[in-house]
Image (cartoon, rainbow, N blue to C red; front, side, top):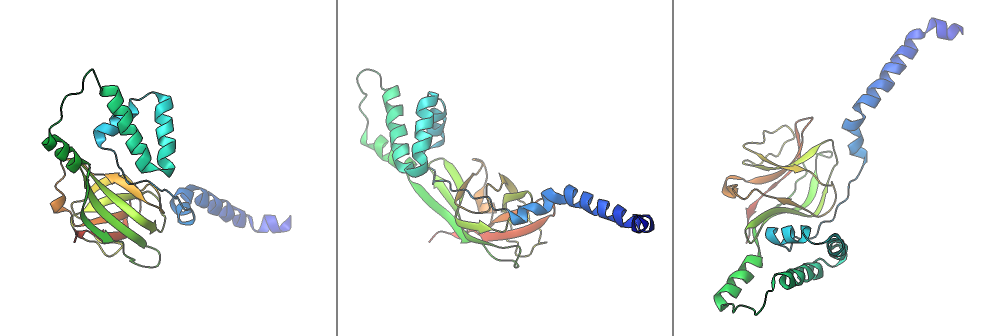
Amino acid sequence: MNLIQRNPRHYLWLALLLAAIAITYPLWSPYFINDVVDEAFPSLESAERDAVRAMPEAQRETLLAMSEDQPEMAADTARAMMAEDTTMGEAMPVAATDVAADDEAQEATSLRSGDWIEIDPIHRAEGSATLWQLGEQRILRFEDFRVTNGPRLHVYLSQNVPTGIFDDVEGFIDLGPLKGNIGNQNYEIPADLDLSAYRSAVIYCVPFGVVFSSAELLPAE
């Protein structure tokens, strides 16, 4: 009792410390948590994915389950199902040039790529970042990716190549929150974006305003 009476400030400071820990928990807790994702390489065009979303729920769920283990088979199955739905009467003849154009639209082309860098022991990443062209769609894809986790990490395309945690990220476009700090993942790029103006992909911590890593995007060889 005497100790409590003599040192009431100790309890006040302890209460303040616990309150500070609770309030700041969302900021520091991600450093100790891993979010793992593993997205397949997108093999359906945007219009095809829209058609899948419009399918009956049972068919859609079956395709999604199949895509986890066999993405290419799921894509082929989806295209076959869409072809059945759109066939009416006698098939129209298809010119060889139309077939060639369709095949070209389905082909994935690597535009530019780079490797993630280590800025310091805390702010670092590994793996690759690649810009892909899939018909009319463009994506930024991470493979063999791992980055130190942090609060509200976002994926940017930047017009410069930041290599320090407090470097400016110039003329950036935000592709959205990082889906996971570990694993393969895809980020869609706006169709009207001029990619020639962007030199790097960046993992950026929004609340602290720091760069966790960057990958300079160089032309594919």
